[in-house]
Length: 132
Image 1 (cartoon, rainbow, N blue to C red):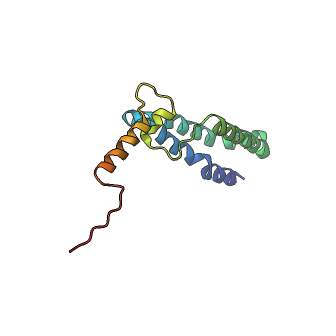
Image 2 (cartoon, rainbow, N blue to C red; image 1 turned 135 degrees about the vertical axis):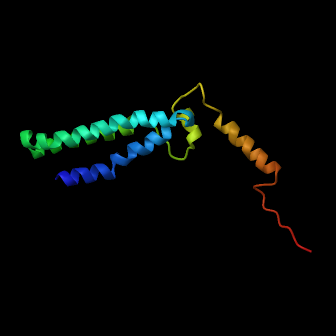
Image 3 (cartoon, rainbow, N blue to C red; image 1 turned 120 degrees about the vertical axis):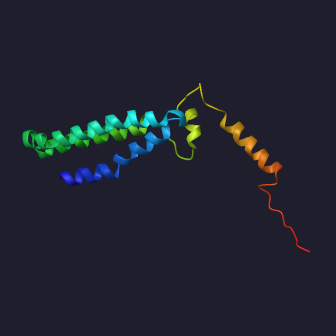
């Protein structure tokens, strides 16, 4: 049962937190942001690995895993309602997604400018050139 719980955690929420941490911080503070956010996760995982054998011995296996089930359900609810979707966005756009007004930039204006520059250089158009 312990292995089933560990496997389900490691195949679901376990790696998701690491991916999310790498996306939500702007480049200039990403190192310290990921480090300071990952430290509590390491501490919590260590704490859970230390209390699980004692919890199984004292309150029983089914109650311990019921507690894990309730915590995992709480993570699902938290993820669904609190976490913001980051799919399809660049790392630079994360500042806009998370409401950082001080450093956010106009994504659409940047895209328009890049598209206009590409069209001005002839990129994006397929031209047929015949060799003589």
